[in-house]
Length: 90
Image (tube, rainbow, N blue to C red; front, side, top):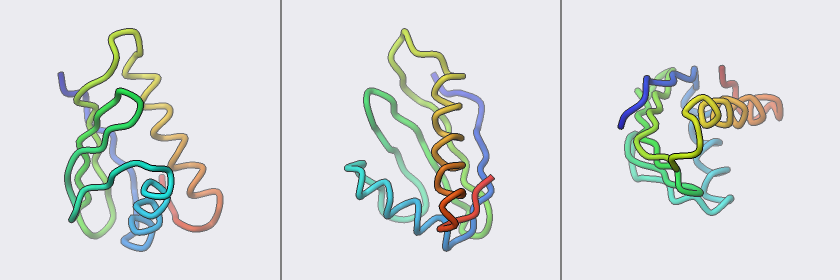
């Protein structure tokens, strides 16, 4: 099960900030610009193009949790990071 892609506008500096925040939160971050992240039973595939966009796909989720809910959480997390001024994410 792979979801529709979620595309987040993200600068290289923003990508670095997001990586640091995820690692600080205990989420293992893959080496390089692509890989899989797993947290609380949800696994996403992510790929950063190195310039301006991060593409995320939900590849595994608990059966009782909707893709829409997870997408909202992902977008909300990036909006929260953007609101701090540390990174610009959309």
